[in-house]
Length: 200
Picture 1 (cartoon, rainbow, N blue to C red):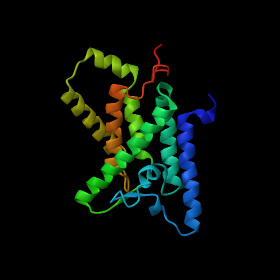
Picture 2: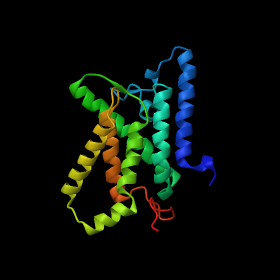
Picture 3: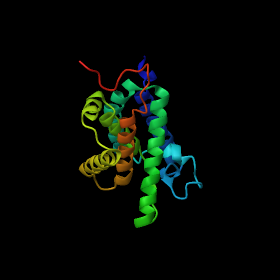
Picture 4: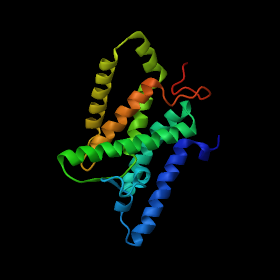
C-alpha cells in the first residue's frame, strides 16, 4: 500500500485541500463561516461534510493533523479505507451537530469547524476496539448499562483533560463516546484487515 493509499494520509490531504480552498476564498473575502456547521442545518447542508475538514487557522489545522496521524494510523490497520472514511465523516458530523444542539440550549447560536470530534472518535475506537481491552472485556463481564456508564465517564474525563478555551468540548465528548461504542462492537473491523493491536 502506497502512502497516499492510506486513509489517514488521504484524510490529512483532504483537510489540507479544504484549508487551501479556504485560504484562497479568504483572499476573495469569503470567511471560514462559509465552511462552518451551524443551525439550521438545511440552510447550508454541505457544511455537514465540509466543517469536519475545515479549520480556523494553521495552528488549529496542525494540532488536528498531528492527532489524526497518531490515532488514525492505529485504527486504519484494522479496517478498510471506505469504513475509515465513512466513520470519520459520520462521527465528525454527529459530533458537530451535538455541539450545536447543546449550544442552542444553553448559549444561543454558534458555529463549529474542525476535525477534532472525528479524531476523538478515532481515539475512542482505538481505546475500546483493541485486543487488550477485548481480552479484559471477555474476562470481566459488565452489563450494558455499566459499560455505557464507564464509557461516559472515560469520555468525560478525557474531554476535561484536553479542555481549553474555544474548544468544542461537546463535540469532543460526543466523538469520543461514539468511538468507544463503535470500538466495543468493532464496527470498523474488516475480516481481511489486520487487527488494531497485534498480539506478540
